[in-house]
Figure 1 (cartoon, rainbow, N blue to C red):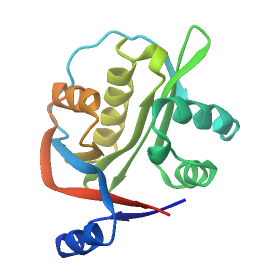
Figure 2: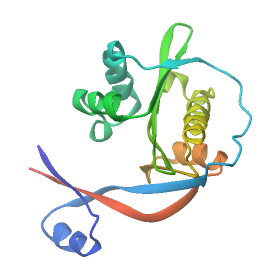
Figure 3: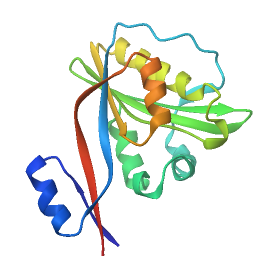
Figure 4: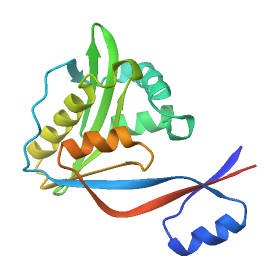
Length: 179
């Protein structure tokens, strides 16, 4: 129903806009040194490794945590379950509350996906998942840790900034043209 382009090449954005694409959002990058300590936080949920049987739960969490454009499908999750070094699901009162994926490549750590169910947002679960991912990255030898999010996702910006992440790199425009 739509064409989507990440504007990795700055010269491409104006011609795409002239062709009817509009700016949906921008992807912004954050980075921090792995050796920094995480801010204190209360344990709000129980964390456990994600298992292949959790796929329906991940899809359900993703569908309520993200707008349709940013949601992952079954294929995305299958790929992450196979390729990511660390995956965690948070459960509170027997309910899935969030999840996170992280990995390390050489000395660079990545928090590749973090989601919290809206009913549990603001309760420290995102902090707990982020701290868990950072601990994994440090233990796997990362010296720097990176992540990205939408420019419009101010709630996630605040979380990342509390953990001493700083904006890094350029913003990548995401352009859409309805068909």
